[in-house]
Image (spheres, rainbow, N blue to C red):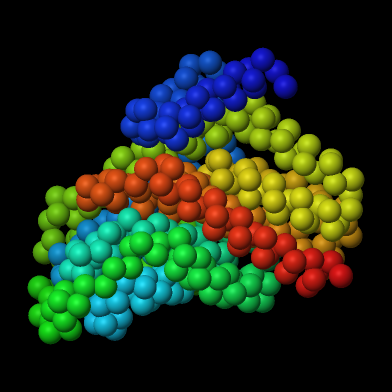
Length: 430
């Protein structure tokens, strides 16, 4: 590698160390790292702000912004209080039952929506129900972020990396359902078992509070029924447009911004109320992270790492598949899985062609998808949903540290990818 490439690696590792140790705020670390990358010419304005390969992914930024505005309007209706009481009553106030219910809802919703939208919707409910039952909210938030990443792997629209993979590999919505969804169902069940072990100290049953929850009428929580129906109608249209992306050809970011604009313009909610729930630090953190990772792409660092991993397999499909799975898991734990998949997709496309370009060789796409989606659970910055959850937690004065998330994430990522390994081998390589 060139001297500039080594210097960009040093800058990235330094920023990442500051994020991990929380010596300074993660936004300051990401912005500082991005600024240094630009100052040393590891990237430039064109590459950082306008390049689809090495720049800020504005589709992700505006998708987040639009959905945050929609959630901000929904919050005015009281729907989150309604859902919190409903969920607690369905679980009869028992903490583990509640977590199972929230995990299943999150994973299922993430298969239809993108996982970031799902955690934006489910997090307010979690805070309210945990407050009602006097439960620690952090284990529930961490489990939901991980469930969203697992559930999002099931479909084309569930996780942003899947959209990139589908575009590059010519894969359809049904392809993901056939090849990814069956294993994802198994992984969700296993994940629930892991939650029972990892968060067992949080499952303290309070009989009095549970009895109090059971006496509540969730319908009384709805503050504005007209606004609720307006908001749900717009949200339903946004969700439908997400699912119909292959037909409508509107990017999710465009759909989210249109939905947010319509909702603010057509209702009595003020602009100030609508944007009050926007997690601006989270959006800025993503921008800095994209610029830093883009600089690594621009200087050839990520490309060389990927090529080295490919070269080590020597053209053997089985070894390539398993190597790609675990390499994607490891790299996606360190850098956001969206720019990683964008970088790896051209290489995987070449590998698929080199192995005959047939349906048998398509296993490499599923290997990349599983590795990137599940590897994102390993650390606090591995996936967009993780960063958003941590931002929401900080906003609500229940901060989740990098290591608090990561100590659980490493276990979940390892176990789930270890289960995917024989699945890929037995289904596609035997």
